[in-house]
Amino acid sequence: MSPRLDLRRRLPKGEPQGWSDAVHPVLRQIYAARGVLGPADADHRLACMLAPHQLGGMERAVELLIEAIRGDWRILIAGDYDCDGATGTAVAVRGLRMLGARQVDYAVPNRFIHGYGLSPALVESLQPRPQLIITVDNGVASVSGVATAQALGIRVIVTDHHLPGEQLPAADAMVNPNLAGDAFPSKALAGVGVMFYLLLALRSTLRGQGAFAEGKEPDLSVLLDLVALGTVADLVPLDYNNRVLVEAGLKRIRAGRACPGIAALVDAGKRSVATLCASDLGFSVGPRLNAAGRLEDMRLGVECLLTDIPAVARRYAEQLSAINQERRELQATMVAEAEVMVARAADIDAVGVALFEPSWHAGVVGLVASKLKERLHRPAIAFAPASEDNTGELRGSGRSIAGFHIRDALAAIDARQPGLIERFGGHAMAAGLSLKADDFARFAAAFDAIARDWLDEACLEHVLYTDGELPPGAATLELARQLRYGGPWGQAFPEPVFENEFACASWRVMGETHLRLSLSDPRDGAVLDAVMFGGYTGQPPPSRLRAAYELTINDWQGRESPRLLLRHIEPL
Image 1: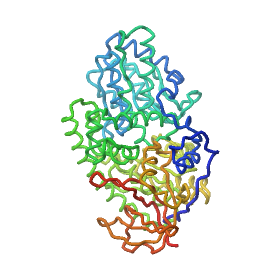
Image 2 (image 1 turned 30 degrees about the vertical axis):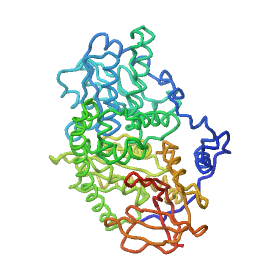
Image 3 (image 1 turned 135 degrees about the vertical axis):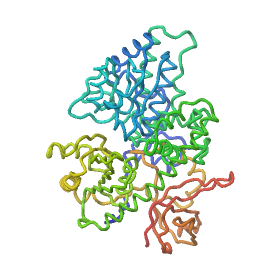
Image 4 (image 1 turned 180 degrees about the vertical axis):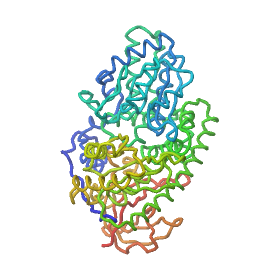
């Protein structure tokens, strides 16, 4: 069931114009293939970001926040147990304190006790009882949770970015760019981005009311390292506005001005603050925070981001790294079990793959689904028991491929078979749901059926898009540096990938599964250093091969050199 990989070249979306000679011609073509045709499209100054007042619901939310600050209300931030939720919670707590709120606390649900989001169980557990709850990265589906809060006399502001369901909660205010009719030009803000925008709007209104003495207005840009981390880790599309936010955050980190928690997490991942890029946030820093919410308590992650004491941050980062290592080992076991299940399945041609194993951990099923989606190139949902006390409920997490909106698919299944799914929500590419264990087989059949209805053969082809061949002699350190900092690269603004033919001059195994190669370019005889993580399958690489690769920088003992990071190889 492993998909065939088809290499296709990205085509330019226009002619590059206006670039200075300092911008490498290869980078100009890469930009053109992503719709960035001139310097103005790559201008990531904060002055270019969209204005906060364009977000719907902002006026009412700001009005209520000002009332809360002036009335010295007890404000509680209700976060989420992933990296977006943790960074958004930290942004909310730090930002509101900067803007005058004196009683600000937070709560993050325990997925095994409270479930997802602002649930009735979470609201009823809050002591002392807050006067205002602000959700971050959740809330648009919390109909019963908001109703419970209001029945207890608690006001609620929902800030979220998830797609709404048929019924919205009756919150006192709601800010979400993805609500129907919202005119905000970017629908790609992460939860942390929505919260940051609310703080910007609040500061603007307070400024207009003369709330700040001259020279005393809070500088909210100090929160941008948190905004960048949450945005990258949540895999939201890096449209222009998000690139502005992420680039500003990365510049703060590289300048040594990150909060102690992020600095400690970067160090724990053996990354360099001075050369940090978006992929470091996504593959090293983000997973350490996410691990706490998956296996332990996300309060550990939030506290790491809130402390201003470097030594304390380092202790939190060490704990988070240990939890992340446990998560990696558990994930590897679960993915291996899932692949055995797929291999043994009677219907190996399932288009929509749903798997359940009673021993799996509910906090890691999303990562299992992601690995299966990558390897099978099929939409995949992995399920685990929702709790350890055998309540008969399953919790599932799904990941999708281009052309299959997984949240809409769950909505369609819910419409066709009411009551089959107990709860669901999410995005086009990722979604979560709950259902009864006895209904798993029926759901798996329904998920496969709708995937067959919605996906054609073209969608099921595994395609890797490349930026074409690098010219002879172009794989230089200078170009590698321009590519590293030319982004920020990420979801919907992908890292540059090239394809060329090579002769394999030599190779060896690194660790147990990785390859280190010397590749010769037949056009000019240049020998290039290359690595391929997970590329060793017990067989030597082809002597002549076509490779898809990224041009990266190898930093060894302070000496930098260009290196090819191979994404795919095939024999010629």
